[in-house]
Image (tube, rainbow, N blue to C red; front, side):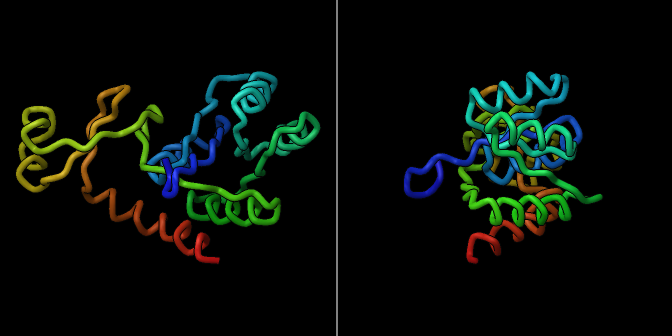
Length: 166
């Protein structure tokens, strides 16, 4: 849960936004990835689960509005550009996007902290020697650590931090 006991905003990313969905999960948004679903199934799922739809498909965004589903039409060539658009459109719509704890970028599961002995033999030896904090997904078992990719994600996450101060 987010600070103060609030739940994170529930998002759903359509098939064109898989990379963005993975990053949003890492940033603490409960984000489902609707890769192989029809437009009708995506809208039904968003409505039932009370998720905000992120889509790059104008027709799907229009259909969402007609069905009472909040949708953000995302554009841009990079995740940075898409994230900026998402934040801007959400603000214009009056949607407050609340983050929780980081989630598994693979399956959207919750993460638990592990000490190094808990990952010995499950990560490369070089990673084991360099890192002291690890996280494991409760659902799929994926193991994470703050490696080189973390720094890139952190730079992107600063957009969210800046927006929350507005």
